Image (cartoon, rainbow, N blue to C red):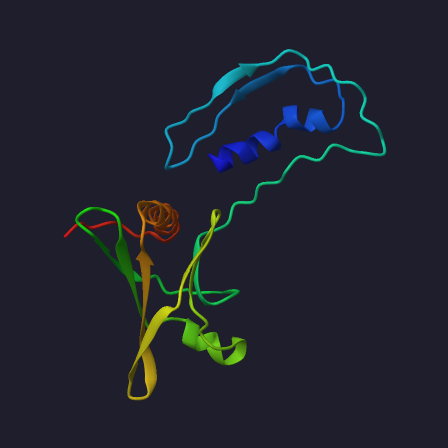
Amino acid sequence: MAALHSLALSSPISNSLQRPSSFSGVISRAVIQSKHSSFNGQSLHFPCPRFAPLAQSSPMRLPTIMMVKPTIQFIQGTDEQTVPDVRLTKSRDGTNGMAIFSFDQPSVFDSSAEVGEITGFYMIDEEGVLQSVDVSAKFVNGKPSRVEAKYVMRTPRDWDRFMRFMERYSNANGLQFIKK
């Protein structure tokens, strides 16, 4: 939905809102396709917009929508490159649940000496940040080999928000859901 909104803001029609022009009023067949959508586009016909000249001193500004690639971070500002295994649990009544992320050989240890210490578990997407401080590391022969992070969802709203993040993250990183 946000991508479609972003597309509308960069269209010739929205550009004509910023400055009057001799826009013809017809957009030829626009075809928008992606591997995740069955939308094929459609011809659109609009009447020629008539706008009063805008004052030079106060130009009209439209909001800019930025798409954020969903990422996981242990150190703020440093993306984790390792894709985790994720286990989900949910209570019988559906009111709460937990997600357990397991990272084998995470990249956070490669950059932690330069960037700093692990400060938490951050899941970042276009809606904002989900975070947890329940992070543990396993060491083998004095070297870090595994990181486990837990994210607790206490309400159905938390669960829905987490699932939206996971859908975006899994699409971006090639994960798939397997029910056991």
